Amino acid sequence: MHCKPTTRVLTLFGALLALTLVAPGAGAAEVSSRAQGQSLITAQPDNPGAYMTYAAFLADNGDPTEATRVLEKGRDRAEPSVDLNVALGNLYRDQKQWAKAETAAAAALVLRPDHTGALVLMGEIYFGRGRNSAGLESFRAAMASDPAATRPKVRLLGGLVEDGQLEAAEEQCLRFVSANTEDPDMWMALGRIFERQGKHREAFTTYGQVLSLDPDRARAYARQGKLFCEFSQFEAAEISCRRALDLDQDDALAHAYLGIALSHLGDSDAARLHAEVAEKAGMNMTVVWRKLDK
Image (tube, rainbow, N blue to C red; front, side):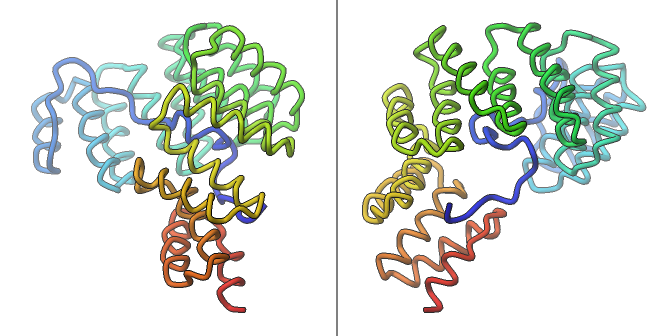
């Protein structure tokens, strides 16, 4: 492999279904500034949706620390809310504050034991704390709570892979795909499993299936670009990664492998530019710097 993201434990399939703050509750207005957010929670101190709306604005604008503080206030002041506790737990999880995240998830599950988002969150927390078996159990409980939902399935597959159960992950994913052949998320997950198994050509074909179902799936193009780099087909990698960035200009994986491809194609300046973007997003771009230093 040319480079690896330095991200937390359960982000193997994070690109498929990145967790966001839960939608605000009824009665909460939209917020476009900090002043509006403060006014909203002052006017509606008992409404958890008000705190969630303001926190979502803060998180979207690059201030997860303040978003966490706002949700903590909501937890202490507003009516008890499953969704607020899950949103708070997600922020704690992102900051790797595992004990606080577990407390928030547990509070949500006290209010609603079968809440899918809370069960998924608890599973991620267990993995973050090295309790893989408990994490898998929580993901399975989340699946049982909402059999039609994709996210618990994706998290279960990611957990199996992270636990080293690659064959079990493949078998489970194939069952999911067989049950719904039109779900691009499941095909995407299958491609990632194939990659982890070293079945690169099978993975490439699987990402093609994703794109046949969802032609605008930027990450599928990015992963094909990565595989083209693995195959030393750097011109094809450039095309795939540029297509991914046309669809999502912030896709770090596409920037990373475009940088790698361009470094092999002799475009040093552009390679450096894309590698810097990827590095800022947490990717290890040593392979590009070594190539450019030759």
